[in-house]
Length: 93
Image (spheres, rainbow, N blue to C red):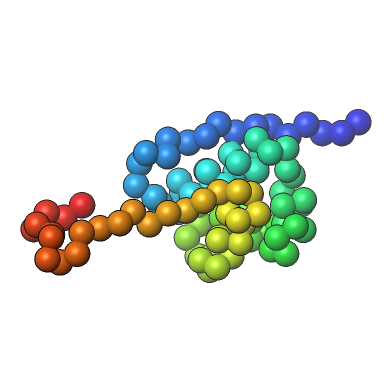
């Protein structure tokens, strides 16, 4: 008998990005895609323990590793354009 993968809900992606939020998003996308940790680790060439730490929001992983996981799962990360210094006001976001 094959174990079913528990699907995790998509977190609120409108909040500022943190390691915890990114980990939750990666776990949700992986489980919603019916991928086990072992399978995702094998496809990306990343250790299962590393993937687990990332999904738990531990912020010690290399950014290139996180990008590799996101690419494999079809998660797109974007940088929101900002105004140039000529156009900027003094507000901080």
